[in-house]
Amino acid sequence: MRKPGVIILILLLGFPVLLAADDPQIEPEWDDYSYDIYVRGDQFFSISLGTIFPTIFVNEGELLDMNFSPPVGGMGTLMYNYFLSSKFFAGGEISGAFINTLRKNSLFLVTLGIRTGVQFVAGRFEFPITLSLGMCWHTYLDFGYYGFYLKGGVGAFFRITSEWSFGLTADWGWYPQWTENKSRNVDGNFVNVMLSARYHF
Image (tube, rainbow, N blue to C red; front, side):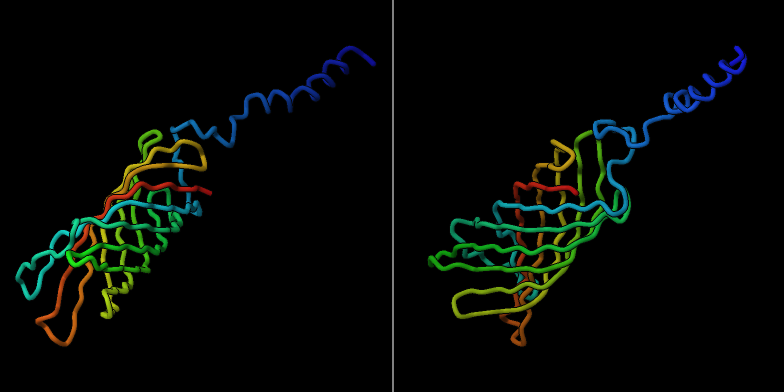
């Protein structure tokens, strides 16, 4: 083979290699925060455990005395979220809570609802702001009530790996009990603070 032919053959064989060397990496490393970590379709499950604090109870515009002792209970929540974009997400939640009263009885709350929110990311730190609405079952001794609840919250998480993040969440919840007897209507407000773990996929 003549010398010019050999040179042309070498160039043809080496050209794809040169293109591949100059081609930027399509999938960036997870530690590179110059791009959005979340995209549409990303999901995560979350489990939270912590405390719930009774705060304000109102009947027909008048404040009621709290009959909880100690004024703190326990709460647990399971959540699922789906990202609609890099910042906005929607999903659902189910939770249960208990609070003891002065007479050694307990109030139980079970909630099932939908949630939506927006999340801001700064490096490995993630800060969600959420709003939840759903159904709530109240149980105290032989009294049962079914109604709705509304809850707003904030959180702070640290992304340890691409799959796991851990953090702290705080929510303010409104749990009304409205009956035909207005003298027994109660608008209950609770604050819960919980430790949370999220699995991302």
